[in-house]
Image (cartoon, rainbow, N blue to C red; front, side):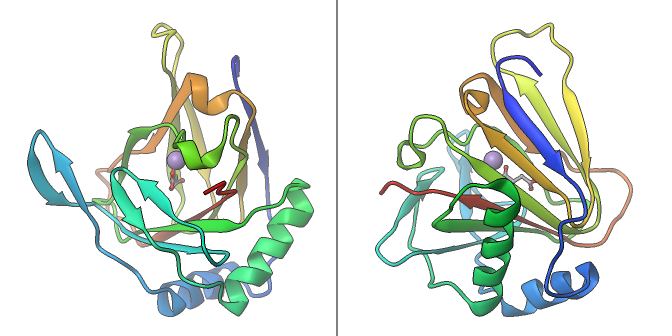
Length: 189
Ligand SMILES: O=C(O)CCC(=O)C(=O)O
Ligand SMILES: [Mn+2]
């Protein structure tokens, strides 16, 4: 990919089997239903979210001030393993629960001020495989990049990626089960 630094790691080792990881994360996470404003109308976001981080951090995400919860043992252990395999360090994790095929995430860049200039973001998936789509922000003729994110896969975005590309998860026509995505980040807030 041009103007980006994106890499993928497969079959990351976890403390439990991937389907058990999905169940544990669904059960142990305090999920929130947040609102979004689209053309002035307020809607429920088409997914559930949660934020866990080191004490004292805060994150303004799509205009929502999120106050993180303290790390659970499971999340701390996942973070340790992700730091090992990516050779990066993180102080926060943002979790998304896509309940079924109707849940999605609109195209965006992770470019909030508290993520710093060139954010390093490690995104880990459990549950149903969904397609992660990347679009160049300026070179509109470049084809979109589609990546199937299977359970146990880490997608690592670094360097200029957030400056030049947007990413998202589309709704899909075919019914499917839940997917959880954890994005490990560093908050400089
Ligand atoms: O679910 C995904 O794979 C993407 C999540 C994402 O882009 C985000 O949380 O900012
Ligand atoms: Mn993102």
